[in-house]
Each structure stands twice: as C-alpha cells, then as structure tokens.
Image 1 (tube, helix red, strand yellow):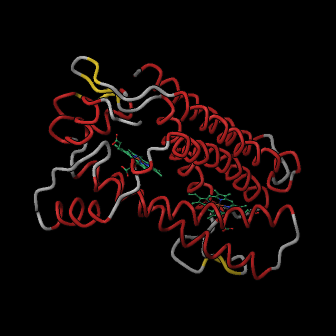
Image 2 (cartoon, rainbow, N blue to C red; image 1 turned 90 degrees about the vertical axis):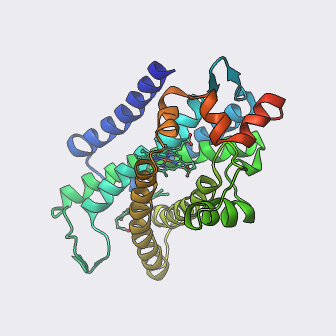
Length: 284
Ligand code: HEM
Ligand code: HEM
C-alpha cells in the first residue's frame, strides 16, 4: 500500500507541477477565458463524480487482517490529498494574485506579488490547474460519501460535539463512544466542509463571470467572500495540521500512507468501530 500511496502522491503532484510549469512557460492567454479550458472545469467535476460513485459502490469494506485493520483505500487518499494539494496550489496562486485588493492595490499587509500582466496571467493559470484538482478531489469525495451511504461517518450529532469534543478535550470527561473517526474529528470536519463550500460557490460565481456577463456588484461580493474565506481556510488548515502534531495523532497520520492501523490501537481508541468490525456491521 505504501508504494501505491507514494506513486499516487507523485502522480498528483506531477499533474499539478506540470500545469503550474506550463502556466509560467508556455500558456499565453487566461485559461479561465478559454472555451475549451472552461469545459475542462466541468470535466474535472464530472470525472470526480463518476469515479467517486464507482469507488463508493465498489470499494472493499474495512476489516481486521491479522494484527492490522484496513482504514483507507486509495480512493480516500485521492480525495484527501488531491483536495489538499489543490488547496495549497490555490493558496500559492491566490497569494501571487493578491487578496483584499482594491483598485489594483492591496488594502492589507500582503502586497500583490504578480506585478506585470504576464505574471498575473501565469498566476491565474496556475490557479486554474489548482481549481481542476480541487474540484476533482472534492466531487470525488462527495460522490464516494453519498454512494457509500454511511451518513454518520463524518457527520457529527450533538453528543459527538458536546460530550465527545467539548467534554473530552475541554472538560477532561471520559468519552468511550469513539467510532472510525473520533467525535472530535467529526466535529472539526464540519467547519472545514463549510469553508470549502463557500470557497467553491464564490469561485463558481467568479468562473461564471468568465463565461456569462455578470453584474460588477455580484462579482465584487464573490471576490470579497472568496478572499475572506481564503484566510479562513489557511487558518483552519494550520489548526488541522497543528492538531495532528500537538495531539500526536501519528497512527492516523501513518494510516494516510499505509492504509492501516494496528488492531490494538483501534480496540483502545476507536472501540465502537472495533465492535462494528468484529460484528461485521461496519458499513464503510
Ligand atoms: C482554497 C482554495 C482557493 C483559494 C485560497 C483561492 C484564492 C483566490 C484568490 C486569492 C484569488 C485572487 C483574488 C480574487 O479575485 O478573489 C482567486 C481568484 C479566483 N478564483 Fe480562487 N481560490 C480557491 C479556490 C477556487 C475554486 C475552487 C474556484 C472555482 C470553483 C476558484 C475560482 C477563482 C476564479 C475564477 C478567480 C478569478 C480569476 C480572475 O480574476 O479572472 N477559486 N482565488
Ligand atoms: C487543505 C488541506 C486539507 C484538507 C481540506 C483536509 C481535510 C481533512 C478532512 C475533512 C479529514 C477527515 C476528518 C478529520 O480528521 O477532520 C482529514 C483527516 C486527516 N487529515 Fe487532512 N486535510 C488537509 C490537509 C492535511 C495535511 C497537510 C495533513 C498533514 C498532517 C493532514 C492530515 C490528516 C490526518 C492525519 C487526518 C486523519 C486521518 C484518519 O483519521 O485516518 N491533512 N483531513
């Protein structure tokens, strides 16, 4: 699995790298304005959806195999890392383009790095490739989630938030009902999805502005929202990675590469999931 994961990571990074390289060396016009490239945006959504549904229907369920428990297949790795790498590239190109910019001038601490028309076009095209990867990863994830029909996998209930997140970490109360994803992970995933959704919708309006005429007012609001949520996603990603480091959640981190967790760890830290695995009522 580790070999497959490394190969997949290489393919994702190479695809992004080639796109960004060509943005700076070969492509001249703004791809967001190019009709074929606009179809490319739709294609990445459709390919993500189709592969996600196929994966959700065909994937093997997690199971105990000797001393290990299977946790992530290649599909989970695609959705997590394609989205994450795409977001990193979008943040890079977004910073180059500048955010919170009015009449060509940055109205906050970060300057606009892309100063010439050529630099702006290159950064916009790098953003285009980042967007392709984000849309592919995000729609793959959503379609896989829906096709799997394990609704509560990442969607928390009130108990998860109050007892499993606030109670366990802030009030130091005991909480034993940990499933495949800890109650705290489920609680933390929700704001991430919400931030991602707002970026996606505001980005969609900005893409639409390149396809159809849109009023300056709508475009202006989409830009403000897109830029504000860029700050949120940067901060939230720092928190997301920070939590892994501060809580030392290395077994989860390792599972992103190896696809597995030790049986012993699952038994003690994810007791409800472990029970589902042993009674074979596990859905995903
Ligand atoms: C984490 C993800 C993203 C970040 C951090 C980000 C950030 C930015 C920033 C800073 C800009 C330049 C300032 C502005 O015009 O607002 C920009 C422009 C843009 N973004 Fe994003 N963005 C992200 C994802 C997306 C997505 C998913 C889409 C499409 C669905 C998208 C579509 C666009 C478009 C069309 C532009 C304007 C291009 C132009 O001015 O012609 N972005 N983005
Ligand atoms: C912008 C990029 C990223 C996004 C949108 C993202 C999103 C997510 C989501 C939604 C989950 C599932 C539930 C949760 O734990 O919250 C998750 C899990 C996780 N992510 Fe990320 N992530 C990103 C980047 C990263 C990075 C850079 C790391 C590296 C440390 C990382 C490490 C993990 C780990 C260790 C898990 C738990 C996996 C498990 O429990 O098996 N993520 N991520």
